[in-house]
Amino acid sequence: MAEKGQEKRASMATYGQAMKRRTSLSIPPGIPIGAWRNLGQHIHAVSSSSAWWLGDWLLYGQEEYPSRYKHAIAQTSLDYQTLRNYAWVARRFDSHLRVSGLTFQHHAEVASLPADERSHWLRRAKELGWSRNELRRQVKASKEIAGGRVPARLKMRPNDDQRQRWQEAAEHEAVDLLAWITRILDDVSR
Image 1: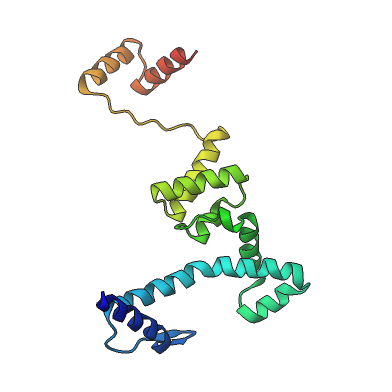
Image 2: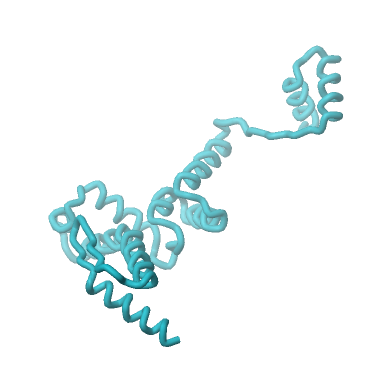
């Protein structure tokens, strides 16, 4: 137990001892592995939170300061469109609707959707461990299928006996197997 307390103190001291510059982080030699890990967690937390923080900061500025983007550009060196995007996404998700464990970019992918759809897709992304790119693919595919722009893709794995029977039936009707399967499915669906 005393060891944990010492590691925690060493970790906190490391935050103070690590030299943080805009383009580098200098870590003193000999820090315990626990302190090194905690420092990494701290850096990750700041990094993954910064877009939300900037968005919320800009939303606050909208109410208080009329020329907020001029000031924000000067303070952050970020361009206007980047700052607008941060504010737009932050506005679309009240803090209680932001899904911990997913990135700002996950939220940005679904920000243009209606609120119930945003919630649905973020919940699925978290449950299934989707990357931002996978979330984008899933949302796009869903929109295309719903809009009738892309035919549904079916994967079938018939056993050898089924395949042989289906092939013979297709040949009996003088059509290829895929055309035969499609006709059968169409007939059954009517």
